[in-house]
Length: 158
Image 1: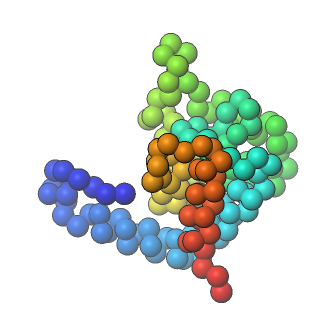
Image 2: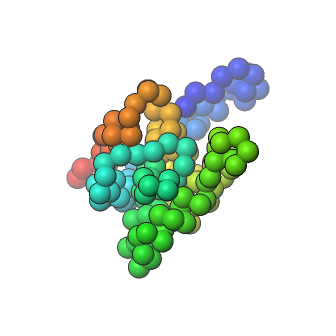
């Protein structure tokens, strides 16, 4: 992520503080554990595809953080279909306009990810990578491959 405009002038160096915080988080023990858990969640998906903007849809597709929540909750004993239904209800398109409110989606995603033990640097970075990544014109299958490669690249192999 890159801060631009007046923010950088008003708070010089904040971008580098954020980047340093991300580096420490992802290289630390807790961050590495969450990356491994996310990798496992992605590998366990029956369909190798990721959606954007929502935790889950009515067809049972999930985003990266939705996959992590799904794995965590199913491993804790909740029925898979029930978890998928709950995740799909968390973020729904507006009935009047048919679009998804970005603020509501962000808040619901953050709350769900925190409920399964994720910290804010992890949540914002994974959500950004899932939803915006380098290309906005990719299929759910391409997004899955890219996000999985992104996760695996950050896991430290001892």
